[in-house]
Structure formats: structure tokens, C-alpha cells
Image 1: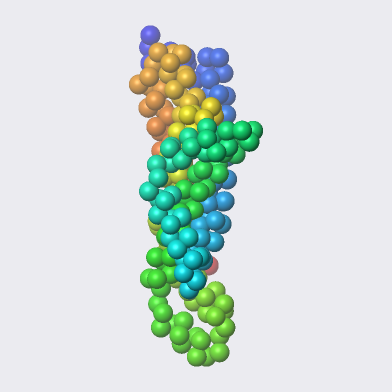
Image 2 (image 1 turned 135 degrees about the vertical axis):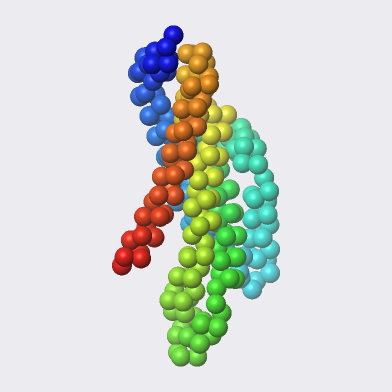
Length: 221
């Protein structure tokens, strides 16, 4: 069998490309929802982490430590087969919630360290000039914080996309599971899995490209 025939068998025969696209769509949906929810939750946890109230701060610290130190696959299995086993929630929702939790812990710590790295003298100067605490944060701290956090944040998103490759354990037909199924059906694991790797690689560099494009537009503005 020639290489072209192998590709035909992997990508075309039986509308395999449509199955791959569906799996890719599922991976993208879980990733986007997890990033959105995880970013919002991470911002809230960061707020708690920087409060003066010892109980709130301790809760946020424990939340971050637990989720950052827990393997995401184990957390997914615990939530799907344990905590939400009788809730009847779709596996897609449980998976998105799991990754959002994990992502939020990393985002919360990233935001906290980014705030700590900002220039405090400028905030103090703004406060002496009559700026409110919120105005000083919005106009001075926030822009600096986002600039500092941006490179790591985009890497967190790429890592999240890679983490979603384990959702097949909870019966979700994502890109990884589709690739594995096609490899088993065609008996061409090397070519099929290599194709899957390049698709994930393309997703990763698409994220980097989006951030680079936003930075370019910012510089032109």
C-alpha cells in the first residue's frame, strides 16, 4: 500500500475527515469554555487570595495549592465517576468544569504574582494625586499586570488544550479519541498519531499567533 493510499484510508475513507473535524470541534469547545470560566474564577480566587481577611485568604491559598497539585485526570475521574456520578450531567459539562477549576488555580496564582511584580510607587503617587483605589488599579496596576501575565497566560491556554486529550476517559469523543479510533481501524498508528500531533501543534501555534496578532495591533495603535 502506497503512502497516498494510506492517507486516503485514514482521512477520506468512510468520511474519516468529518469524524476528525467533529473531534476537533469537541476539543475546541471544551478548551474555550474552560478558558472562559477558568479565567473568571481565577480572577475571583486571586481577589480572595489578596484579601486581608485570614479565612478568605487561607481558603484561596488552599484552593490554589490543592488544584495545582492535583493531576487533572484524577480530578476529572473523581468528579465524573464520583461526585457527579448521580447528577446526570453531560460528560462535556463535567469535563469543562474540571478543566476550568484546574485552569483557575493557575490563573489565580499568575495574577497574584503579576500584581506583586507591578510598580507600587506609581500607585502611591496616583493616590496622593487624588485617584481612588479603583482608579489607581484600573489605570496603573491593571495594564502592567496584564503585560506581565500575558506570556504565561498564553502558555496556560496551550497546556489546557493539551490536557483535554484525557477526556476520552469519561466517554467524550474528542480529537485524541478520534485519532486513536482511526489508528485502530486502519492499522496505521504511526501516520495517524503523527497527524494528530500536528493538529494539536497547529492549535498551539494558532493560540500563539492570536496573542502575537493582538500585540501587533496594540503596537500599531
